[in-house]
Image 1 (tube, one colour):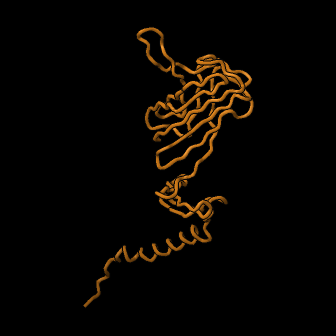
Image 2 (cartoon, one colour):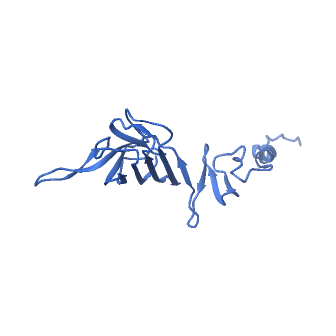
Image 3 (cartoon, one colour):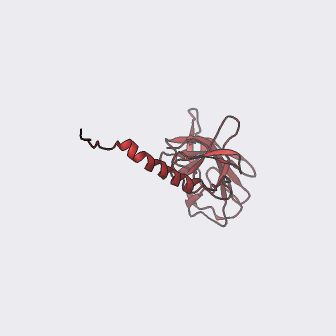
Length: 210
């Protein structure tokens, strides 16, 4: 009775090759891997990789382009410093008057920004603005802010728009008369107060990124 040559079973044919390729991949990616993120990131990462960072004692995952810290109920994600941009028409200064910190847990951001007027050479004209560490998912109004002046303190707010890191600054103003009401007025030199180099202001808030 003649033998019939059956076609090969593809799963069996390529199973050996698949195992060999995986061994090559593991040898390339995980031979002497980097566990201490203070010295560098693991080489050849793939989306979904999770590593334990021995420097901060936290887990990190790779989303395909960036390593992120995984927060849990006992350990929060680190507070990260960033340099906001303080802008205004004609505003000039030396050094870096604006400093900031943020904490990112998933898509939730908490930020705080402080601006020292010490090295301002010209307070300029027009409304002031700052920049956030990440663009928000939606529009926000951050009202946790104040101007610290030698003779008075004034509440300020930052108006954020979705898709941009720039926030415009306002101060809380009121109208006069029997039908007075409060409203947001652009924060600029002379409005609500004439800033000096001994003044500073700050703003903070929480929001979601896109």
